[in-house]
Length: 288
Image (cartoon, rainbow, N blue to C red; front, side, top):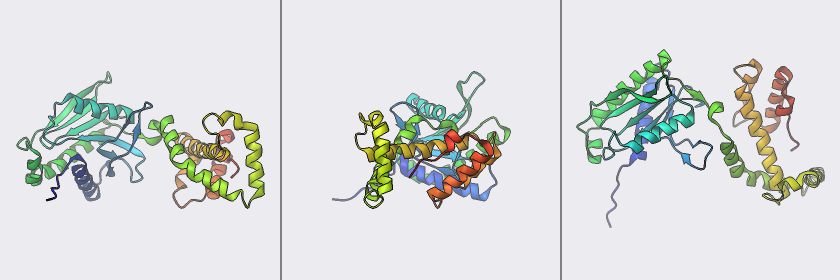
């Protein structure tokens, strides 16, 4: 059987991200990086994935804008297409969004009443009408993307379009996802180490005797329960430190924590922040 490879929105999103990142290297823009498929929690059960996200820093902590992409068989006036993009912008705490179907591009910006209105539309490639046309006329739409990026960048420069930070958009359900994804590994580590570390084993047993009733319904296993507590402690400290950076210079030390940082080193950083800013009840660490 012959294998047929067809491009889809995701493959073209990768192309766009690569193209935009080339432009950020070529020009000194407010847009420093493009990425994609970052999970957004809206505090409800649904999870959404922006096709392209524009960032204001290389660390991808300052989100400037989300792009929603479709191929030409979805009209630029499609209501679902438009509403999805605007809903994601609201979830990100942004005042703008951009939709693109290779035939047209539309920039939406919130007005003084908080309503998304069309700020600008690009129709230079309205001869692209099919999925096949997307590849056929690549030399037409790629230069247009450059024009769009440079024009949107001007809105960032003037302040008409504003970004948001991860601390402003993170929600309880994001933390719950972090806990769910990682508690098994932490619990396994604890269970393995108590075999040789009797002091650790005694500590967790005492902790479970005192607080086990609070976890028994959803976490009857003491190692899973304590693992959740540990992860929640880390996420709360990290998020809170980022939130207070604008008010307390010492909290900027949180940016020193990276994938190479050990837990002990991270705790030392939190101790330095505590010494300067207090908030001991938030920044204090847990045993193990």
